[in-house]
Each structure stands twice: as structure tokens, then as C-alpha cells.
Image (spheres, one colour):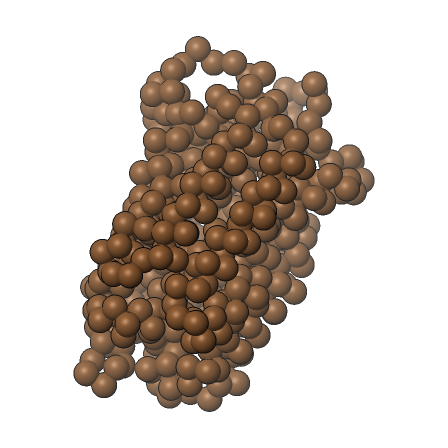
Length: 418
């Protein structure tokens, strides 16, 4: 039985275009749910009367619960139709977002973020498993490029709208918007997404616990998990305090934040598909290195800025996010080539879990490094940037090792077919 893989000419069918679009939209809603906390941070610090450390926990509890859910789901990830799993976890994510929309205290919001993370954190791994099942490695970077547009779209559309809603109707309103939008997407998935279950043909006698242990204990997979833990550091450390840093340190007025995020997002959307195509043509590791070097330079500059004109912050933000997007697209595509099909769901689930847990540790760590002064400025931000830079340098080495492993496996596979 054949899957809906792409023909040799790399032309997407109508269903494949729908599949890419719906996965990108799913990612958009889940990423937006996380990213909206960044621009809302400055509002939550004031309205809930919490400290930066407490806000760091609002971000990190989502990641920790998502990580735990990923580990629990890993043993079952390859034993069911991926469509059924996607619908189950997406419905749970919507429920958690609704709870965020009605939260009235810091403690309630923490519980709501935990519930959202338990379900939302697994969705990305299921989506990646579906992509890996249905698209060839040769064009997977291009697919990832389109899917990663969701990251930028959450800025262009979601974050400015979320900020506008928060300023006009209160910080709960963005969560109402996300929940309503996600409910519509869930209905579309239920009606139009075809079952994804060819992996069930690769039967295994392992029970869920043994399946989990077999995946975790694989030495080749462990290298990927280690690289993922460091990949998560950059975004989770810098992003939660991005709005507070822009307003209090860079002196960007609150009303200009939607414009800043919007412009950055537009350029990221434009570059996303181009970078995905470039990763397929020039090599995924090569693009990862280029993106990492660019990101390192921008982090070194950005975290040491003082009061800065809006146009200059926009330029630096665009360059930084192009570098980050290059890393995300190339790393995601490269990671999908590591597991075999019968362990793909478990690998993606554990990988997502490690990403979330590492991100949670990073966010909590950032909350302990960064301190808000009486004047509102964030202190020790350059030190935070230095930690991010070191993690990026180490990741370049780890991704080189993984790339060599993928190329070796590819050569062995080619020889066996001959």
C-alpha cells in the first residue's frame, strides 16, 4: 500500500497542498498560544502583580507539562492512526486555551497553562510524524519551510491582533480568539484529513513501555535528543521577555509593538519558503550553520542595546528571525531523517518532550537571570544573550555529527536497494 508521497518531479498534489496548509494552520494556533504570552507579558506583570520570576513560570509550566505529556504519549504514538491522535490532543489544547480565557488569578492561569501544555505540546510531534510519513526527504525542507511560516504568521496576524484585543478588551480576549479559531480548524481536520496509518503495517510486539524504552535507549536517537535540548534554549530564553525588553530597555512605545512584530513576521513569511527550498538544494546542515552564525551575531548585538530607534530595532529583528528561521527549518528537516518508520512517532514525541522540558528549564532560568529594576528596565540581558550564544555554538557541533549519521544511513539505504 502506497502513501501520498510526492512524484519524482516534486509537484504537490491538491491533497498534499491541503495537508501542508492544515498542518501549518495547526502549528499557527499552537505557536500563537505560546507566543501571545510574550507581548502580553508586560500587561500580566502589571495586572496580576507578579514578578519576572513568576512570569517565567507561567511560560515554563506549559513547557514542563508538554514535556511530560510527550513522554507519556511516546509509547502509544506508533500504535494508532495519527489523525485520531491529532484530533484528541487538539481538542484538549482547545480546552486548555478556554481555561486561560477565563483565568482570573495567577494560580488559575498556571493550572490552565499546565492543561494547555499537556495537550498542545504533543501536537507538533504528531504533525512532524505525518509530514515524515507522507513526504520524501529530498523535498522535506521545502515542506518545513511552508510549515514554519506558521511561526511568522503568528506574528503578522496573531500577535498584533492579540495585542490590539488585549489593549481594548483585556488580556483574556486573545485566548478567546485562539480557542474559537482552533475549534473551526478542528472541524476541518475531522471532515477532510485522511487517515494516516501506514506505519501500522510495521507491526511490533513491544508493549508501549518497551517501545518507549527501545526508542530512548537507541544511541543514534540520543544524539538527536541532545541536539534538540540545546536548540530549544535560544527561543525559550529570549522570547518570553522580548516585549518587556523592547519597551523598558529599547524604549519602544507599547503602541508600536504590533508594528514591530508585524514587520518582522512579514519578512519571515517571505523568507520561510525560500529558505526551505534552499535547504533542499544546498544542504540542510549548511543552511543550519549559516543561520546559526547569523543568529549568534544578532543576539550579541541585540541583547546589548540601549534606547534604539524603531527602524533599527526592526532591521535587527528581521535579520535575527531570518537566522532563527534558517535554523528551525534545516534542523527540523534533518531531525525527521533520524528515526525509522516503526519508531517515528515515538521519536518525534520524545523529541518534542525534550524540546518542551528544555525550553521550560531555559524559560525558568531566564527568569532567574533577568531582573527588573525599580525603573522597569531589565538587568543582566547581555548575560542571557551570552548563554544563548554558547548553546548555539555547541549545537553546531552536535548537528554536524547528526548530519554525518544521516548521510551514512542514506548511503547504506541506497546500497541495499541496489
